[in-house]
Image 1: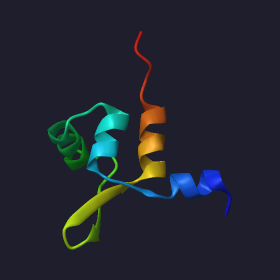
Image 2: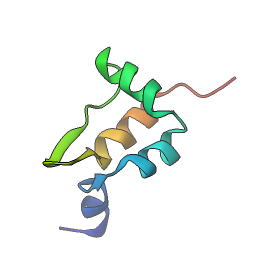
Image 3: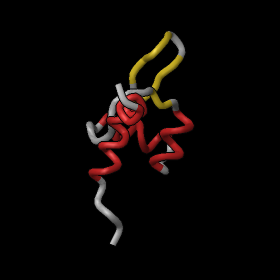
Image 4: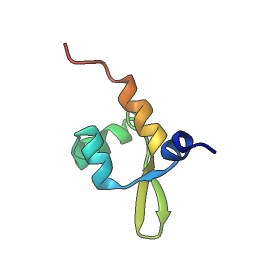
Length: 66
């Protein structure tokens, strides 16, 4: 497995997803419930995370600001 594959197959925790997307936790929660943001995954009893490649794909699909 090469480094770029490893980077996109890792889990991102809350602070990193907030930093990457610029969206608040509440906004991401609303978008996720509407099916418009990647769903978080439970990675342990008390922790959730997002798959990096899903977040990257979501960001790439966003239209550029005019």
